[in-house]
Length: 205
Image (cartoon, rainbow, N blue to C red; front, side, top):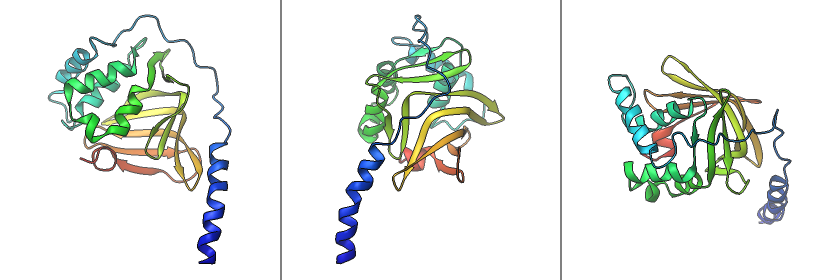
């Protein structure tokens, strides 16, 4: 009982310390998004549909082909996609998504813009606060370079994305996304890599 009370008294201290962690120091400032809303509403859904058609005949899991198509779009130089455009496309593609995955949907809506500048994809949030997807946070200004290695979509030079465990931020260096089955492997800047499956562990499919 004494130990339980001790844990209760210490826990708020750790929570305060975690909330006061210094902001991530990016290697460079986030550039301005391009003025042209290429890939944005009202044609994002159409663009995703076109990309999905291109994926037919390729060994891509049909349950995640929309996400693969979206990644292909933001890989384009000067691409520019807003959060409302993303959620509008989701509503047309899968109306039940915002009910089954409320947290993910609401945080996607908080995106100000995702854009590609000189080959680096940036994420800007509407309120400057991190996007929260369960135990994973995406800070305002997060970025990565996207490439392909066989059936893997690889996010290299990742900055500003981290997982949380025991009040410790574990920053990600590289993310590997397998388009065959939705497996995701996060290689951390410090510590062992972490693996999850998009459908089973994140979307609950």
